[in-house]
Image (tube, rainbow, N blue to C red; front, top):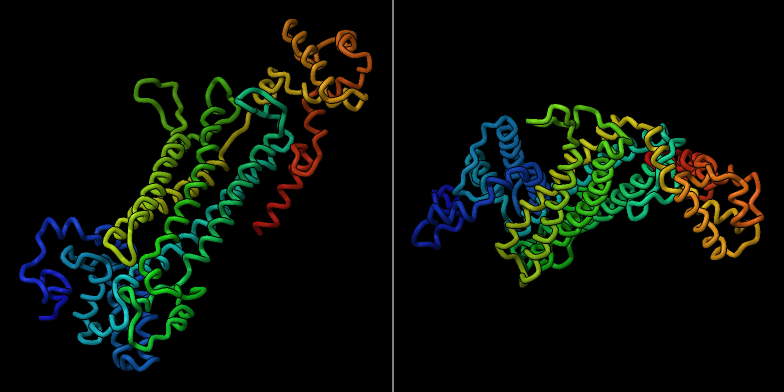
Amino acid sequence: MSQLDHKSQAWSALFSEPVSELVQRYTASVGFDQRLWRADIQGSLAHAAMLAAQGIISAQDLADIRRGLAQVAQEIESGSFEWKLELEDVHLNVEARLTQLVGDAGKRLHTGRSRNDQVATDVRLWLRGEIDLIAGLLSQLQQALLGLAERNADVILPGFTHLQVAQPVSFGHHMLAYVEMFARDAERMADVRKRVNRLPLGAAALAGTSYPLDREAVAAELGMEGVCQNSLDAVSDRDFAIEFTAAATLAMVHVSRLSEELVLWTSQNFGFIRIADRFTTGSSIMPQKKNPDVPELARGKTGRVAGHLVALVTLMKGQPLAYNKDNQEDKEPLFDTVDTLRDTLRIFADMMDGITVDAQAMEQAARRGFATATDLADYLVRKGLPFRDAHETVAHAVRAAQQQGCDLSELPLATLQGFHPSIGQDVFQVLSLRGSLDARKVLGGTAPEQVRAQVARHRRRLA
């Protein structure tokens, strides 16, 4: 009976009794690391090809390994593969089935490697592919936001600071702020990918191997940018997982900020936007309700992803070199982070395409907070007043408007001139929401012409 056929484990010859059922369940990872099977087979094929090229295994062994792994892949894809808890993880399950299919060639596959460098390689290969998918989803979300921005470049939205009406902005400009955030997220993912895409295989358990491996050839075969240069670090490094989860947390924070605004804007107290019905739910008791469950849930899931980041950092902080069983606990937080971010980005790209804007409600809200007060101050500065004096003068004008229950633009010219004689008829263009918006043509400003220019810039970047 081969060691992989024994009921206990691959190292059973050393032990006098099998692992208990409770320990098997406690230590097994096959229930969640099955998703690594494609990466496991991909890495094994590259490793086997290198072993044959180096004369460590025969050409016949390589042919048998390729044939056997192709059948294993077919069985897993079809659902007929039998995953065994006693074999603990994806790696031993695949290797055991390979050995059943091709005999000794399957046993030779593990030459020159350990599960320590094997799992590190598998996770990196898997995560690299997920990062590429996420990059595409970030692009789709940005494109959806660009479409929304372009359609609403001329729509006036009250801009807020401290959640108080501050100055009028273009709704399109507001959406472009999130495009910038998600663009930075994409840059971070691309940067993380470089450090994910390095090969641990060949580090073996911790010290490297005495076999004449060509690690660079394996890295090239797998499309990796280089090899991990220190065997101890190669098997115990999880920086790449932590760094990815940090980048994912930031992306989810941006989603959460957008979610918070969507939730506010859909409420009757704002009424700025409507979310398509397919992204809302009703109430079991209140028939009039349309609840923004998708953004609310995304806001909640952000805490979940941030928690995974803390879990991974805590997991690593006390570990000595090199590999420790603690590292098995890296996968579930990492897997769930990927799943959560990927699903969230996909649904948000679709949801943003279906948003309907109520321009009238936005403009009415902008009129309620003296949003053009700063414009009046700037107007007085252009008339020769120091800004601090202009600021004080406008404060008196705002107080008068508050007392009369009107907007600054509704005060009579004579009243405005009472605050400063240099104020002329041209002030009313300055005090209008549209005039305020159009005046901010500085690069990165909220003027509609700037919004359209930024939309065009982003579209060139994403093309």
